Amino acid sequence: MGLFTSREPRRLTEEPLHVAPEFVGRPLATPTRRAVAFAVDYVVLFVPAILVALAAAVLSLRMADPGAYGGFKTLILGHPTAEESRAAWGAVGPILVHLESPGLPAAALEAGEANDREKLAEALQGYDLMVAMAIGEREEVKPPPHTVLLQVEKLIPRPFRALALFGVAALYFTLLHASRRGQTLGKRLLGIRVVQLAGEPLSLFESFERAAAYLEIPATLGLSLVSLWRDPNRRLPHDRVVHTAVLRVERQAPPQPKEAPIAEPESEEKEPQAG
Image (cartoon, rainbow, N blue to C red):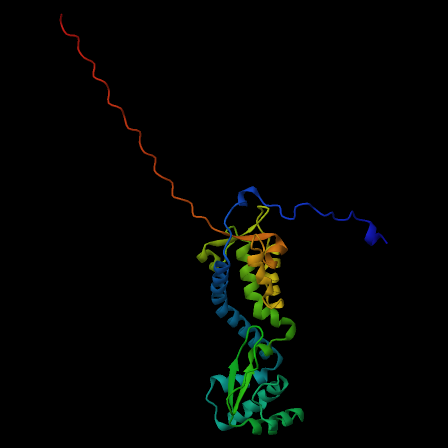
């Protein structure tokens, strides 16, 4: 009972936005600038995100199945003999069957279900191993003939997969939007910045909330982007979550040097003439 009656209910306010006076009338970032800035950030983040996810996959495999780790290392990095290749396929075969890797022949699937490593290695002998990684959803990839596709992201345990794939991006946006500038590298290049409309700096938690709310864009199939034109302040869902807006950075004109006052010529006093 006390759960619903102990606290004073929150009241509806007349004005949903409380904007600091210094932000009123400031120019907003255009949709084009915001899109280009995000594209720049995506390019900046791509390589670090791939490296972190790859490291997480390798570490998970090495801890869970050292034999399969050695087999993949032999097939990917080495030049194995026929005997070494057979042993490596026998070690990695159960993992590939468990991951339902594209390109596996029917004989390998049957041997994997029967847990027969010898027949599994024999079925995969002469095949090539292709390695790929995807961040986010992707269409089904069909490998070339006699090629098995290893989808590296599937080696990461499911509870940690999102963290490994998107943790770098979340950290990047959280730290930079909570900074004094409120700018990622892309926003700085495009001359825009994130501001908290009440005039307070974003806390790390608020900045993380804003970064997490980016997921609403794909969740709505991009329909939430309409707010860039419909909302008078061009605020997207992740802006409304933490009460932010994206503004243009107005360049301040360099101070003009003060001109030295021009000294007026002193009037010459005429000497009195003798009368």
